[in-house]
Image (cartoon, helix red, strand yellow):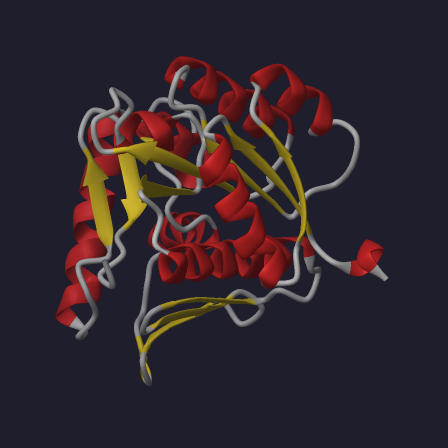
Length: 232
């Protein structure tokens, strides 16, 4: 029976936090494999398929970033990283390491449930060959019809703008460097300066705002771009 439930890998070095988070995840109906160490995490990640990975290593923040990069280099599994407010690791470092989301401890149960649910849905939609609709707040992209709507308003985008926004909406909370955006968008590959990416981001942000949408593209200083979450 449990084989049909989503597997979650929890990497947490604080014993009480690990127990609390594990219990919350199990209440959600998830199968949890937990470990306090990077070494065990690296072994566990290769043993089975996971629907989600949560990482916090307060005593070894650089190790937590390393394990995140290692997982991201070989998998598209959603990754949520957790940090204490007084830790040296910040949001930019976490997201640039390949994490999809970021939670500040102490983790409130409602925040944990919300973020875990969102990332599980995103991961499932990426695995499904029928995933033709991307939704983020009032924004909706129909990949099969190549259309974009803000609520009920159809907004015309150039092909470059469409691919740019699709990249962000398909990977909410993940930060993309300008180079990664250039590599992902066919029209920007080869010989295009990074300032051109900034120009496309500005035009796309303005077009969405002018059609009643939110300021959806966030610039992450010294890193790149991510999809802004106006619910936070």
